[in-house]
Structures are given as C-alpha cells and as structure tokens.
Image (cartoon, rainbow, N blue to C red; front, top):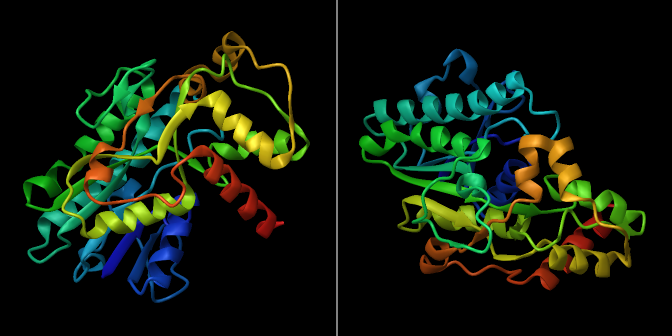
Length: 300
C-alpha cells in the first residue's frame, strides 16, 4: 500500500513509518521543512497549504500530527496551539481527500483516549459519549474535522490512542527517569485506571486498521490496569523501590488540566479493535513492562 503519514517525526509516527517500510509499504512523509528525500513532501497546515498531488495515488492517509501536550504548561495560548495543531491538520487532509476524485479511500485519524474524561470505574467502549474535560473537547473538535472525508465516502477510523508505553518518549518517559534512578512514586492514590498499549502494538494496530473494515472511533489499547499495578510492574523490571506517593491535590495544582491525564481514571475497552481481529503481543502489564525494559536496554 502507498501510505501518506502526517506527524511522522513524533514517537508514534517515527515507529510507524519504520514498521510500515519494513513491512513493504510505500511510505510518504508530510513534513513542514524542506524535504530531504523523495519520500518527503512539504506542507504547511497553519497556512492551509497542501498540494493535492501529495495524496494522489495513495491508498491511505494516517494523521498523527499535533504538538506534544506534556512538554509545556497549558496556558491559554498553549491550549489554542494544542487544538489548532490537530484540527488544522485533520481538516486540511480531510478536505483534500474529499476534493480528489481518485483520492485515498482510507483516513486513519489520530485522536486520544482522553475523549471520555475522568470516568472512575466505568467501562468505556467506543459507544460512550465524549466527556467535558479540556482534552475531551480537543478530541471533539479533532474528530469533527474529518467530516469532509467521511461525507466524500472515505473510510475514516478515529484512533483513540491510550498511554503508549515506550522508553523512547511519550507519557511514560517521565516515570522512567526516577525508575532508572532506582525509585518509583505513585501518582495520587494509584487506584485510577490507566488504559495503555506498547509502542510496538500501537504501530501494529495502526497497520491492521489500514485494511480492517473499521470506521468511527477505535479505542487503541491492550488493557486497562490500576496505575499502581502499572508502576509496580515497571518497578519490578528496574528493581526500583516505591517511595511516598505524590498527592493528587498537589498534582492537580501543579499540572492543572494535564493532571486529568495522570490522575484521572479511564477504564477503556478495545471493543472495536478486538472485534476486528487484532491481538496484541503484549496483552498484560507484566509482558508490557518486560518489553519496555528490554527496549531500554537496547537503546542504552
């Protein structure tokens, strides 16, 4: 398949492009800088600039673009940047697909498991409504931007990605710093549900969805576990000792909107992904933690 990837320089995008290329797919990367190879095409979503020829002849588009939400404080300006960097790219790609008479028939649109908000013990399938937190509202706008492609008849799958376990970046990177130093501190009570997937299974799931007859929201996760259980499994792999937990009240004060991502409880279920025939290689937190540790060793 010829697959166009937006957001190819991020954690998931980098791994996905490598995986798809190894699997024999023809991968085209959309970049905001001057292209450095024939497989790269420049675009500028902030200026609504994309040559339709970039998508002509492609079988599918995967949009993983968007600024990292955890690297800077979520000021009003930063929140606008978080929204715009996602909605502008999704909208531009969707409109371009809709305008092409023989354009890509598939759009796999990046999204997030934060769509549901903090839901405690509730089991969350794709049928649940979008929540009311900041990140849930981001998802609402993000996914709505794909409407032109849907109306034009493209198969659009909305990738509601959970916490991606990897030693190379993402949400887990903050936890790994103290683990490597031999300590681990739970965030809040530790009883909140974390929906998670390893980076390897994330890219495998995306490749699977290129051809699976799936449309609409898809919860991308292997499992959901208590935060304390995830941390315990990681601590065991690193031989780290547990220290005093970080109080939830302090985390919410310091992290503000981002706190919902770490102390909020999202007990998602991969209902659509499982029904489509996908099986994760790391289905439980122990095998996932062992994989993360092995990847960390290889990188050191």
